[in-house]
Length: 128
Length: 223
Image (cartoon, rainbow over all chains, first blue to last red; front, side, top):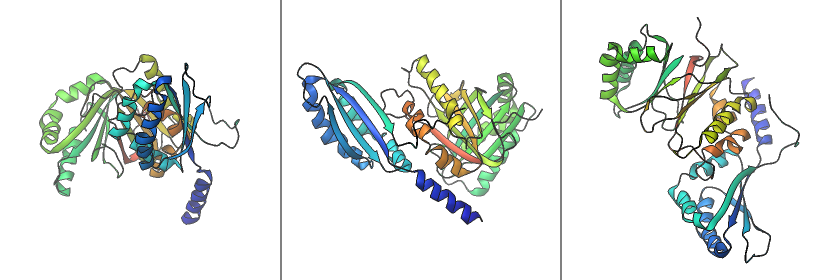
């Protein structure tokens, strides 16, 4: 009986686990766009790969380099499931990761990171 | 009500029988008339900076806690034992903060505590929002049966701790999977803790600890 219940629980769990996406939206000083991209690709990306993160997209808005206004860079990362998310998360304590954000802070005007995933319905809200 | 929670890591090489003896000394010291109740239990595998033993004491108020700490049971028995045999102790004293109890009659469950401190540049508004987000977790994660978030007053150990976030679960998996893997946790609340997040206000050093309990530590004690 216990094994059957556990099996049902594991199947339900597997059905609900999907990839988790990370969106980094970074507004970069116009004159530092190339330098930031180099740092991001040469330093941050390998560190992120070591933490199990896969770079799905590297987008820019607008998709043309502006001379006198900042562009926004958008990096979409994925990890396969919540345990992988926590592996990524604990990897954030790696001093090289902290150093990357500190070393590039002077290039960045604003930055935000959010986590995304699919939901069955946008109206499915669980609340008290 | 007021509590003192200590996370104790023993020195290496202490035998099992010595450990049992130390635990008995602490238990005896904590069972005086000043205390409303206490729990002493070994931590479970998987804790992070969580110590080998959780010692959780409940007092009527901070005056009783201070009175107990001035008395012989602490001064002559427990404190010398810890000084001689503990490699590290993280400790907190706190008036009980806001929380909730869904299962006051919890039997053979899991107690979990997270000790954390705020960065010095955290604003009052940010701290209020963090408190709000943590206290909302049980609304989304129904595996959290009982919970309490307390601002720590005196503390010792690795950090000057700011908060103790306590929860109880029916079984270990509800903590290690249902709680940890819930999207409200990693997708929302964790932004305050994540060193990569610009809005992060919690310092990196945390104590994440948990132990098996016979009865709830967070439900109000019987009168």
